[in-house]
Length: 138
Image (cartoon, rainbow, N blue to C red; front, side, top):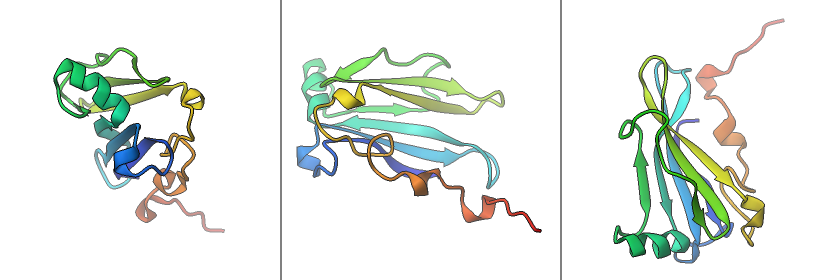
């Protein structure tokens, strides 16, 4: 489903000021109404991120945009608490830039993990739009 999605939220259901780690992604359809959906932007924030980013003098979070890097390039594994994250640039055979997102050790976070990759319900986000649902007539 296209739109803004929370991929990870640690701890689950945390208010913004209590979030240790949050990953938001913007998913967009590329092509027609029933085309593939790709991540175009990924934003990683939270207290664990701020602690590392401030050491680098960059601000309060990490933002990634499709098309900024060459395909198959991106971050190395980044550790926040015990969770490891990685963002990699991709490109379709037609030339559309997108982002891949990887997460490791979610069970070792020490907290319940919310978001689409955690314990939150992902049914709506994984469902095709009404216009793209295939029906079979009997």
